[in-house]
Image (cartoon, rainbow over all chains, first blue to last red; front, side, top):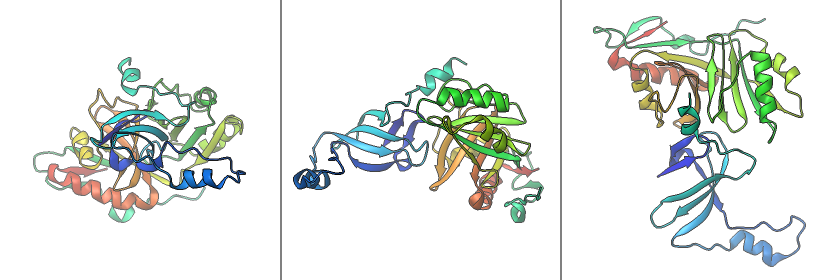
Length: 98
Length: 195
């Protein structure tokens, strides 16, 4: 399985660390809503198909990535930085100019 | 200044080794830069950090992820969003950057004693490195000056291409000797020279 890191380009999955389900919404840290916390900790969609996931390119640029992966085919449908301020510079494009 | 010892020393044997009867196709050296500095910009401050690199090191970073350049004395390349490695033959680079990179722009980490820089050169350099790292070493995909961060057996390596058939590899000092031995073993079948 290859994941195309927006910074590093296509890399083998061994360079990446799975950081969990990307559909979770963390309640406010001060929240006393136990149902919301329970949902955050335990409830998962577990879809047979496209799934929002968080990955870290731990063996490369160490950026956290928002990945959509198909759980049936392992196809990676999209990869983006978690941090929106990172510019998703297309490496090949930028270097073709030189 | 205290003289820095090379972590490779017990395994650093100058001369030709391996299957070199038909010529040496790999040259291995330790570049031993006086300074290795890691710079990181806070989000949105990247341009100011790139300007500081130009002021302090005199190197104008090209656009694009992993872009870099080397003038033979100083080298710089991007290895992550907003993060750069700068190396200099002279010592004292971290101090110079600490003045130019203010706390509002980003951080300066002196890795001069924490990393070892190994240079692999020769017509088979790409071929040997392809045994280690699952990245594209072909010149169009990995141009001269550019940097890549990847891992070998879960150990980080930052690689900068400093010539069409020359790469500088920055590895953790504590893993450098084992990585060096692995590089030597991988180069044995084509013949290598340690300089």
